[in-house]
Image (tube, rainbow, N blue to C red; front, side, top):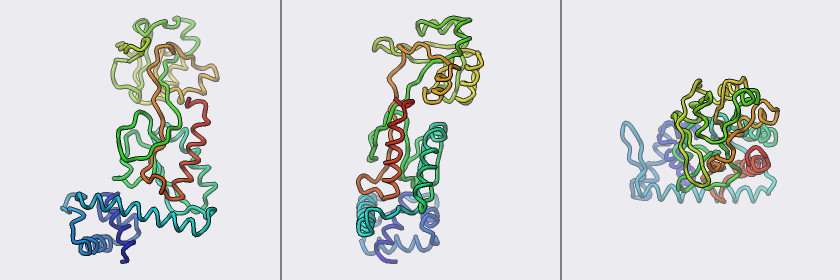
Length: 299
């Protein structure tokens, strides 16, 4: 195996955490991936990976070498793209991750448009309600809701998420709208464990934190079910605004206690390649940033 192919094999092992998974990504046998890394280590005279029967761990030298390999291979791909012309079609597989509901509502339509325009790219979507490690799990890019921890990932802010309280207009007509968060004690509460698994809802009172304990009358496992129950007049619920924006626009739900909302959470498109991102990744980022930034529900 030539050196560049060996570097790609080594990176695949680092990104996927194992030789078998790296081999599947590369379309080769595990023995080929193992031999490629062994040849690199022999040429360099340094241990890049620590192997046991249970895991593969990158050494300190291996981590530095992986960063250099990633940069070199990205620059080669960029050079190839430039030589082929700026209009050369992206190709290969793109893996995208996002939270389940946000992915279904906002990312999937972008994926559909991306596939319609880029015939040589296949897309694998991971819509899961956990933070996916892009490097360890071999994912090209993700959409994250919330503040980002310090990391080596590149991030582009595309919008924000408001957590709002809402209820059906007929419920509010029957029971009155709460004027302050403390008034929620006099109302039926519909709780979605997808938003919060606690009985304490937090508010912002002119810059001061205001926690309020609530006693849910109805607790549901999904945001969709909570929204439907609130629209049916069962009580007041708390949900991300983007999930109920259409129901609010249609008059099925009305917002309450808006002046006590906590600061909105940012939405970012994150990726790991920086300016050397492959053409297929840059094309999706450009499309996602343009689409999400122009959506009034995310502002």
